[in-house]
Length: 176
Image (spheres, rainbow, N blue to C red):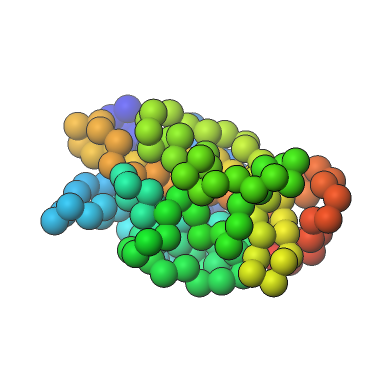
């Protein structure tokens, strides 16, 4: 674990690692300051995460959405209100692949925050306010402090073009 932290803290984690799905070598870290999450490594650099063409968003331990990149905003079709009442995801509506509504508090990021594990390659449908839907392939990881306590989570997601689900938006320009 210490090696992974050193990689991230020294800035060696790259957008290429995220794009390649090379998640085994990435250990997301942060700390609490005045009761709020402060991310370290690549997640601390807004310009860097905006430059990564997959959706990325960060949650505090209570599920509050505190950071996201431009690709996530494009996928959601809206700009969420960061640091307020937005919880677990910025999508207007989340749905299970079956099409049923997925309550945000039951979404995979809430599971990661509660149990400290990771969720890999989970499918969820993001529905925009205009009704467009896309199937997202999500990988969610805990953000830990130096004592290895979970203090938040990060979701890295992309458009899952390998599956066909009726009624979904298939424009790959919406989300890589």
